Length: 455
Image (cartoon, rainbow, N blue to C red):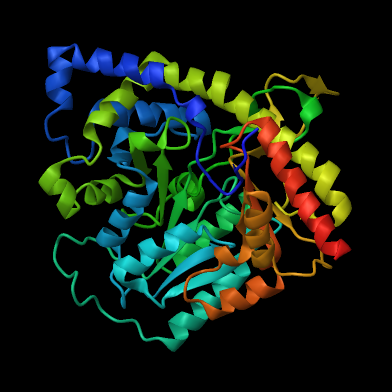
């Protein structure tokens, strides 16, 4: 049993890395003179075209859109975080772009990316409810900001290199969100697209957990769940006749970090062809070529041979599903009786494709997945959650992320809302540790809570 248990770490287990598949891909590339020469030169700006085509086909098979996704909508990145920075460099200018709107509790490590891009003091939180992002809260605040602040004209990014700058950025993780674990309802996704079009906002979504999904109920057994919730970018492509202009109002930020390995440093962006073409023309890419070119060729081989899909279906989903069930059994046994509560919103329902029919109608399955769950602490906890986390690390060698970490940087109202709500929560990750260690971590948290009450 591990002495140190880290339920904060949102990393995939090294034991799940597909090393042999990557080795086979590398051998295929580096033992072929033709593939080697293509892999080791400066990559095309938009990325390795076979990978762009493979990703487009793979995404089409996952999300089942009405029309197939074309490779012109895809450009290759070196991961979701780096690509977020490139999006800001190409499509925003602080001052002209008025605010960055982030769902709270927020993925706190995104805040410095926005701050480094010149948006210090311009980040604002948007609360979640049971269906995800509170659209009406966001609407009223967009209206208020636009009414109070006269729209400036771009001062620095005025040349032909900048085809469109957005007035607002909305950042979200719609499916199995980090940190809240919530999945935004289809209704909210549609409302968000319409809102973004109305206020000239760009919705940037980290769509990195979507394929890691299973039934919330352990007794349901393995089943294939369809459909995967449509992404915001899918809805922007089709809703009410499609994008309002060639740039669109949504970009999907994808990554192989959670489903292959973080060190591969390969991801993709999907948006309109005009948007992804412009994104591929960021100065550093124009100078150095695709920022993840060699790794991109290896990822292509994994997709083309089917080894990536096999890895997801036969290794990742069964392992994460078992760890999820182990965590929730432990939460129900040890934490729920103490007053802890799971706070992951209204489950997204899907129809299984291999779980039979009932009275002519598909059974509905509540879907779980991703890496994280969010629990709230007991109301009578005698100390703050931050103090609880410090004591857990000091006395029980247990680490977890806690609510006040998830506030939006520089937003006093976000901090105030945290003190009344999500700040009393804990984010737990099941991806890093094995089942025994997950159970032990939950038991340590329960023992600490019982001890605090006894004192």
